[in-house]
Length: 130
Length: 263
Image 1 (cartoon, rainbow over the protein chains, first blue to last red):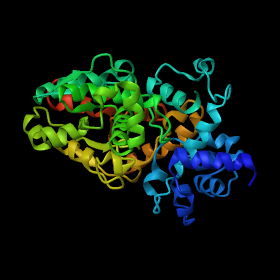
Image 2: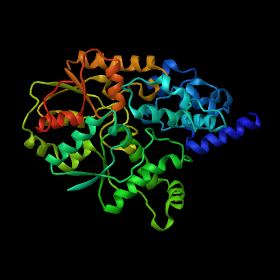
Image 3: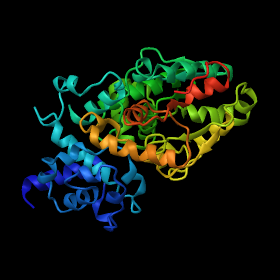
Image 4: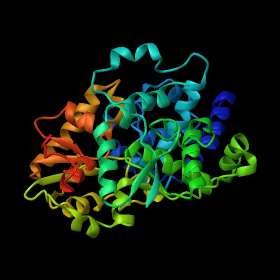
């Protein structure tokens, strides 16, 4: 593992409080994930890739922006590994970088229709931009 | 009795019916929802990252305002409730997080998660009581087959939310029974509708919401009831002809403080 990946791995584990070594590779997190079909890397892969220090590929993946924050993998993991906490930590590292917001205010108007609740917009901003 | 009330951004705008009928119904049941002064938006989703501090301060301020009055804090929107309850849990259990928050806000007046946080459904079940509600129903919703849609945020993460069994919940079905209607149980009632990803991927929300609607319909439902404005939006946008109402609309109808409508 190179120095940058090592640093990122430590940062992710610190932010998330997750211990990926507890994972027994049952795959329940990915089986229960409502965004599975839309993800390049699935919840169980986040666990193994963080464990192996393979972080940069995750940082550049659109999978970060498909997690629905539904807490299903957090609640249903039989080993309490809680994969979504890793997704959240990697996503934050990605968008905390200067100029790396996944969504900006200028993007919003064309994503709206007249019924969309404010809740959707604030939630997307919380997840996609800093 | 009085309780502190956090309406949240959407209840002041797109989900006005969720707000006004929460207040009207609570009054009939002897509870006044006293809106917190100058509350700030909860942000819609809770960040599980332990070093996210600033994004949780709005919730702490609301919790602290309730604590100063010695009231419990009640929220109707599933998302606000989730964020506030998870933040309160962090204030109780993550000493480093709580210390940073308190240092920033007012070290001489530390808050450590003392406020009791209720979702409106919990207020109905645990404070008022479904039996009491049953006794106050003037317009029982007889013969209506109603499917409760929990979605994600009321139930999960269950170790923190502690509202109900996360895989086999019954608080909403008990509520539906209390107002005289017939609850319809179906498999996808606690699966995600697509949430905020509906903005970037309406296809994902459509897929998820269609499956939920078809499942509820196949189980015999005439109507879906939810507490979450975003769930309602996703279900209606992708819906067929299934009405999707807020819990508070049905409650107000049963208590005689709302005209009868069916979506």
